[in-house]
Length: 317
Image 1 (cartoon, rainbow, N blue to C red):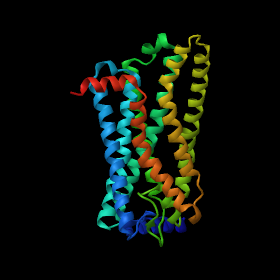
Image 2: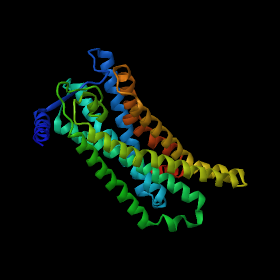
Image 3: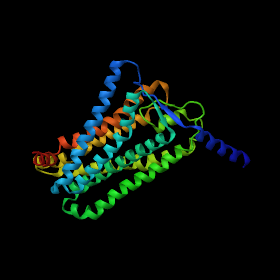
């Protein structure tokens, strides 16, 4: 018991002694041309992502005809995407422009908390959107009864509350890690995987929590989404009219594209083994996953959605 108490005390003292980490992205270089490209690239991604997501939120809020379950969930997805990019890109731009790649211990874990929150809520909202499409196509006559206003508000609350709770659980498990020598994070933000790579102990709790989270927010939603779309495809194939099949599938195509891009990029990032050989590839995929995907989501929905486009045209002078 005495040794256990000493170990816990050492862990706490080790983490208390850490006042800051050093973020070192793969593109940190003295090359002026590359520096300008990086700043412009991330600024444009952030600007376009925020602008398009805000436009979608504004259009949905102002147009009464878009006050339906599907557009409520699209609106929440845009809010999550704004959160995703705002958590990491402004800090990254500051690092690039100032040359100061130091991030405090508190800032690091606050950033990680909101990254987890954005990721978990996005997974949940994509799952709910698949259920929305399943009900709309498989049970069209009961759609407004199953997904009534009260149920939609409840689902929205569940999405954000579960995101906050699970993010707190994951972040608190990382607080138990011990960092002995290296405090350099080879990533564009404070990433859990990057911190595990430099931790020298206390990772057991995080792995336990992560395995449970992967089951609840990884395997289960994917399986449910696949099951929903199997049923949706069966119903669509039974529609005799070619135009009817095309219209039914068009209501799902945007969600399918968003879901495929998000799951594929996220899986690619976290399935790469922790090794110096894959360090560059992991950071490139992380950039795509956390900055480019949140910008693409609203573009996919706005370009492929006639109702959003028509509402936008009405609002424009």
